[in-house]
Image 1 (tube, helix red, strand yellow):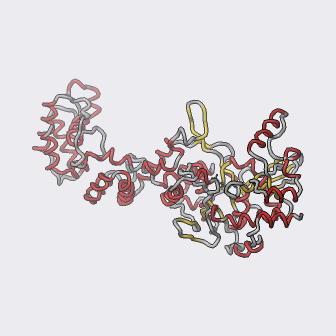
Image 2 (spheres, helix red, strand yellow):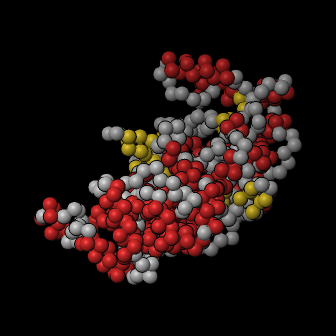
Image 3 (cartoon, protein in one colour):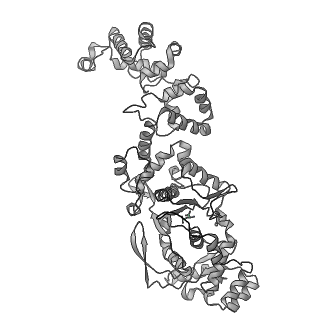
Length: 547
Ligand code: GLU
């Protein structure tokens, strides 16, 4: 029996050939140097920050070269698939504005190189597998799970290399007649790729991150099609999809590096040009004295949903990842403070080869800086978008008081040294709640030094009756606070006060604190002048009278 006859027996209904598919998915007509990248997540129900880093890298490479960035849903491992998992992937892409030009979502297909969902590409994979059988580079393997387990134990006992190769590869040497008979008898089988490699020989491979690396050749007859659902394994889908979708650059995690020799052999066997690879290093977390992999079980920040739910502007997350991606990013950012990250000349050779530390504190600093530079309109918009989903009551409040909220957000903003107090939108309510009567229900007053209630009332009443005027400009306002300070026996001159503290009841700082705490209950707020102005005399009086 010929290999072709065996192939026809296994795939009787597959009549399209590789050439047919080559015609259906021709080389892309792109400008010189344009790169085609893809984000290829498995729908697991979450997006790991490491996956997002890969997507960001893909996006950048495609954008920088006027190329194509597409999304491929790698759902061949159906056991792991959870409902709405694709929604989660799209949510992350939409949140970050890292949108693919080609994708398939909720029945809508964008792009001519689909289907973009692997489980819908079964027929295509089968045509390629059929071809591999025809040319003697693939065969059905009937080994059961328990036979394979036994083999593994024997290999372990003999200290032999694990895997399905050489004399261990029992089904490799079956005749086509034996194979045909077992297929006809309905025995379950997987399809294995027939490796011609020899681990004593080396392959040289040029990784864009690590440069030229040598690997022993692969000699393992890897499974390329599973028996239960007849879908391909990752390795084979990588070959077929990245070839037919005309991917030029594959960005993926370093965990795939050991598979490179197999991938080299697969692409060679089919005579396809292999894409270039960028293997991103793992993201690490500082844990006491050690650094370890960020883990989705231990670290909430391992998942992209964390950043969405906390209300980080996506640009902050992107910016913090960019500093990890290329070692020269921070320097570039210092020289180009207002440029978009998309203008950064990404260089794969500058991607780290060892794990990179991902630090939330650094993210917060980056994000505070970014939010502080936004206009009040931008912060308001971002806040609304966040609150609409995660704090509906607050959303109702800020949308019922648009101008007022914007004015609050504008305190110490849009100036040379803006205030840096929000790292994420979930921080906003915690720091401005007291500006809304609906939320103002203080349980504690942070009086600091002055605790004598009568004195507090005296300060506030004298201030409001004699000095406070809503129409004062900032200088006049402060002059009046000083006059009040003086009148009540407190020091206006801090230096003098420090030299002779006993001569005074306190200082102008204490007076300001009493006013600040009296109307907000908090000892830390943005500029008091604007707080008072926004609250207005009536509400200030109401608050003071309740003390
Ligand atoms: N589905 C694979 C994963 O999620 C993709 C790896 C790749 O990008 O090639 O790990």
